[in-house]
Length: 447
RNA sequence: GUGGCUGUAGCUCAAUCGGUUAGAGCAUCAGAUUGUGGAUCUGAGGGUUGGGGGUUCAAGUCCCCUCAGCCACCCCA
Image (cartoon, rainbow, N blue to C red; front, side):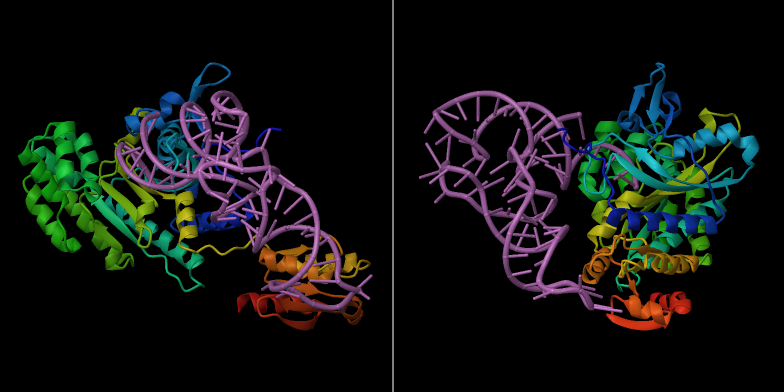
């Protein structure tokens, strides 16, 4: 016998996991579409040269790649942003700019699996290509906020539990500006990477790491750290940042754009405390050039960011001479799902249909088929139990799968042209004429 | 990819110093004289103790390798 097993970091999805997963996908689709983003898809495999050298050395190392049967070097997509850059460069003339798309698909990363970190997982990306205007930055913040709010309503809404989250905003121009002032512009990648760990390892370790990785002096490290350590309200932080980068155009522009994002988000209906300026948040991906976003769950920050993104103004430059700036973010669907599970926000439902038609009288199959079809015709999912087992067993099945309603009709009811509509949660039952079954069900489902 | 911890039934766990045929609860399935569920009772299935090798008269228990999970690093959704 072959041991049935799955690779490390790769998982099966049982119905109780897949039902909330599909619900999450549907929520993301709805939100993205409501902002005018269009769906696209791209291949899981690309020529290796398309994918490598876009994120960082580390991402190249984590990429799954191999030679195909024809000897071509191919890679499995590591994210959805790099394939998007290729896609837009290839189809720019057909798409027209600006182009807004969403893309919900699986990506693969060959890193060690952990809680909330998998080797195969789904990302839900949305991006706006072809504009540098801050309106796109603002809209990105709005979409992230709307997305997480909608997910909160869809998942904890009825149980009374709230899905708390906070969005951290930064702009890399602020850091680049300061680094330029300090004569460290060339060293920005290692410096940003060290800085990103500030919350985790503390100021002294970061300073040590910067000195080792980028050769910064104590004074330079100190300047960079003093920027990252600023605290207070968004306005207070920005005032201080402004002083530190004063005199550098890039830095001043970064501060200006951060202010515009905050103001725009407020105008767009985002509560003031939902967005937090965090100057130390830099993100490891090298391709970000401007605004940067990260989203953390208030009750489970340790699982990491569940929705991150930012502005990249020259990602497509490797594929085309046309200037294609972009901005967007990605919802980590599987990580979020792991978090929701851990927070107890996922109800144990193993059926996608709310109604079970009991196969009660073995000679009445046509009547049951007719009833089930009438319910479906009304837009409500209905399953007919596949064999005439004892009624008690069928009800037990309905309970365990999480059905909301059972339809029971025996000889007596069918002769009278009626059917019992049983609310499984309240254990109450009403006998109604066959014609009004859908209405009776709809009433229970709505209540 | 590096390091640490862990691995016994589908799940949660027992099993004395290495000592006979590896147990229990939950879950699953089947019943409890055939028109109403989450309870209870009875019974059944399910394990080469993650896999492989070694030490020993004897290994779930000790050693090595390997696979998987968790944690840290790295990185990130």
